[in-house]
Length: 507
Image (tube, rainbow, N blue to C red; front, top):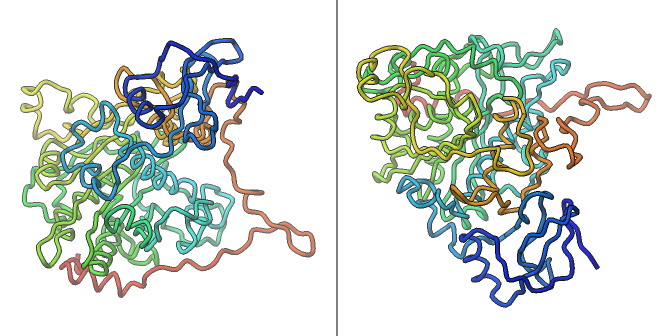
């Protein structure tokens, strides 16, 4: 009996002398399934691809899917014999990911997708609807954040929500409700801090503190909102000893501005995150820890800024002089600062891995004229200018044209989409290797907030939406917006306490 997945029919297998899998997978498959036969996988258009077919697919740890013009897709749940708990420092950039990107290390891919999904959760949990009185907030209480998103086994507990004031010039980033009475007139939810629970910590080999920053999912006009002007990072009381270390002014404002009359923005995003990291590192001071910061788009700029700030401020250094490693997994992020900022981040030991789509415009801004790709002599000449930028860290460049699932003529929003980046990660095995989905991540996720999949997959574009847009029916048959539970988080005196310990309470 024929078995089909994603337009491919897997027929009763007969031996094939040809193996068109990449060398990387050929070696892995020979180790994992030495006694299995080679079978034929035939598409509906009779294009034949040679791939491994197990007698019992549900036991083989592999699933076949694909496109009529492309190779069979392999799903492998257990990709490597190594345990993450034994090599997590390497995966988090201890050696700057040398030898892990080409060919792509399976454990690193899995971790990148995992952290990318934590950044995606910021979009999925955000209330974008201007007709909602809670527009600009998170749709779920932090205690059931992942459960509300139907990912209850994430392994993290959200310890704090992060907010920023909308009183700065980034109108395309902040969302406001049309209701006259709203949860907050000046605040927007921009992310969260989470800590791994005991079970996940055991598998990870350490207690992982993760910060996820919200970015921009549908509109790219925020790039034009940037002042595209560098200013010293020390101008906002960040303790940098070098006044030549500069970052983009709009990013710095978003990170440091506050509104003392607002319950949610009485403390800046910077103060909120520093106080929470201080609290958590004290709570788990007897354990091995890591600090991982992730974000997409504008959120990746905040991820880099906050990672630098944590190390520059010294919060990651424990009383016994142990330094907690700080890593950034950035997706489709813009340039944040100048060469001085890049050099300072590297000097402090912050590890940064940037995942980009080569067709995405956001990583090319700001600094489209003077940047790290410019001749060294030119960069030296314009070093002190307010328009000279440089990317930080190691780049992993992906190309959506390599995916057989995606349209080639999609718009810029599609090229920038985070779910599309995670799809590209799943299929990337190194330069020159075929695009083969390694974990079998559902391709339907790509069209969650864009129109990027080829039409013959019949996945509707922009399919994700709240049920009835948040409207519920009462017992008397009327449709209303339900009140949400009151927002809860740590009281201001807890933040003040930890900021006092850091010497930042008066700033």
